Image 1 (cartoon, one colour):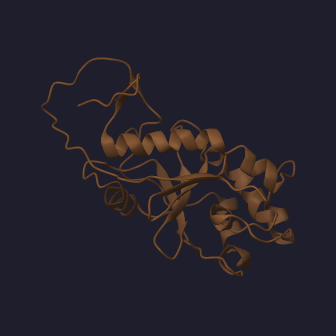
Image 2 (cartoon, rainbow, N blue to C red):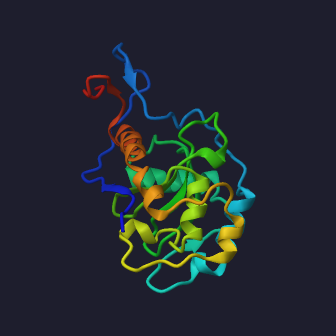
Image 3 (cartoon, rainbow, N blue to C red):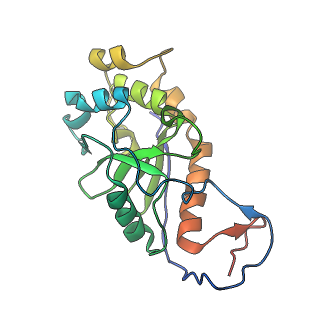
Amino acid sequence: MPSPARLVITGMRAVAHDPDAVQPTGVLRSSGASLKLPAVFPREMPALLAAALKAPFANDHEGHDFQALDEFASSEEVADWWTAWTGNEDAGVPPFRFFGQDGSGGQAGIWLRDPEAAIETQPVVFLGSEGELAVIARDLHDYLWLLANGVGPLEAVDDLDRTPEPIPELIALAHGEPRSVEAILSETGPILAALEELVEETVNGPFFEDGEPLD
């Protein structure tokens, strides 16, 4: 069984930012700006996600560690977690809508990679308490099919070591053409590279196109 694209970020360090410093000119690389997002955002989940997370399977099956929220975590909670996770006190409100967590405090959520796009079209990701990064699905549609196929909300992050069985109640919620677990997980790789870039920029500062960090 394939696993989602994932990696572990190690050696995180925050770089002090001097707002009065003269910044060098150049073309900056960006994986999606978090600062364009509102400081306070609606906490209501998309109806299909909320319904799927209320299904017993989402929170209760063998070998699975996940606690779903009733609504998205607040902007204050997300910002506090992001600051502690990156070690950057100037990190601000990140482009994530967290909807659940594992027992160690790792967060599952929707990454608003494109602030102009509908939330249903955005990637579903996991940020672990030990620096793990994983892209679980390319969008909410694929995430719902992952659940419908019998794969728990975070189960695939640590490799799926059993044969999942489809969940009829969740199949009824999923829209569009059915998607296999293999197809869903095979399309997460390119998104992980962009997620890693966002984290690196937050931890170590922005970069020029040649990969050199701005001082």
